[in-house]
Length: 174
Image (cartoon, rainbow, N blue to C red; front, side, top):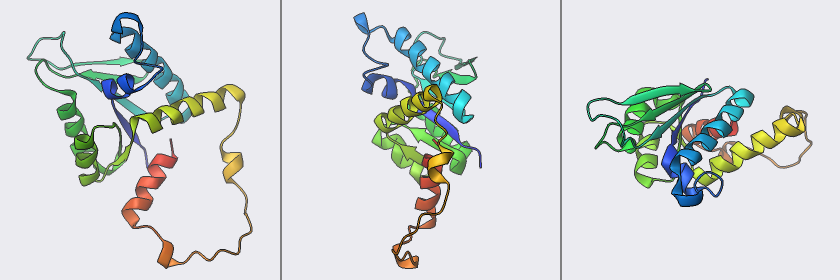
């Protein structure tokens, strides 16, 4: 199953020490640095990635969309918040979506539609870990392969619900 990562752009950037703190609050520099990090992440993981920002510099009748280094970047219409654009995308994608946001309203909407959700700070950690592993040449499949002997019984009693298991698998793919 292919995962479509939908990112609340300013939510991630402004909560991040890496992407949100520039001299004079230069948001453009933060956006460029985030897109560069996501492009490197996409080369490693090959997930479809969409970043949604609040658009203020585009005419009110259009939504601005562009592709930068394989990352789809969407700016909402003037007067429209990015949350609504994210909700529309999640309503279409449903179970194949993974939403990156710390906004509780977006998270609740996504979970109700069957999408997986990850906090912005947690995704940022995964973003940098994947970049680090690629830089060092570590293959993540090495640590997951092989049988590990155990005496712990794992029966249906301790099994998570199907929905929670599917969400865990989506997040594990990051």
